[in-house]
Image (cartoon, rainbow, N blue to C red):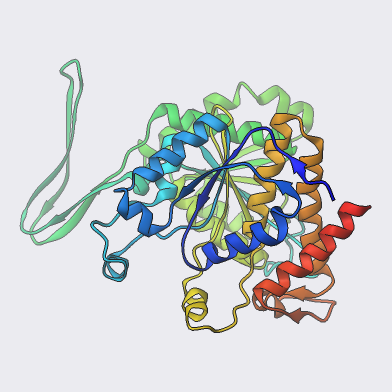
Length: 403
């Protein structure tokens, strides 16, 4: 079989722990035998980030701006435990947060659905896509541990001499305080991305904040969305789709009662939490696709889950693991498909679509990883280990490519 050629490299960002192991297995079994893969490689594993003082993350983001399409493995965001475990020089920031900030993009996450896996919310009949603003909020916050009684203030000093000062709290005892921010430009880009995505998908768009409580911060998000929507109103009406705003708590209740099949736009933290809730309710966090889209149409595909630490420790002890690679495979297929679209390579697009179809063929035939066994209905699933699962996908992929 002649390998499929590429003309422009992908940005390849390697990662940590069990997902790093799966990353190589996926390439060896499902990509390299079929594609003359061209990538610009960046090792975003925690060890290399520490060695380079996180410079490699910045370089990977710049490469994504330059080449246009990236695929990223899951990475560790270190906490105090990881500082000791990896003997780090400092507690490096989330690579995802850094890349999202530099690209100023929106993260769109959609569950991979199967007839044999019914959502935990029984009335959901179609996938729900979470559109997560990928800049600011708690992910770009600053924090102070308050050691004693005193005043905490929020102060703005304008370049033209304008100043504004607000008392946050009069502390009578130790505590904590944090500051978060956003920009009109980023919020506006987020809104445009959401409306364009809804038009492409021909689906309703919901947006939620808590502007009844956050009368300036959250209210600004709503104001910008309302302003930007006017540019898309006629297109929405022509397509018969709607834009709907409601409070975040009301949105959660409506989502649970809905039949699915829409896009739910959320601020950064809300989107982080709700995408995990939606993916789990549809079956598994390992069955959630994720793509970061920048305002100037740069794309970064990744799995929505973490590094699967528990399985990695078992792997290190020589134990067999049955880790679900679906989201990581779909990150690769999504990136290859987009690269094919941009470079007008129909063979690469066909391969990516065939890879996704082969994954679904495998699951629909009952060959699954252990996390999906208890979720399958109407078929008798057979649990296999990670390598066996990838090999089963490869067999079905080869069959599809011969057709």
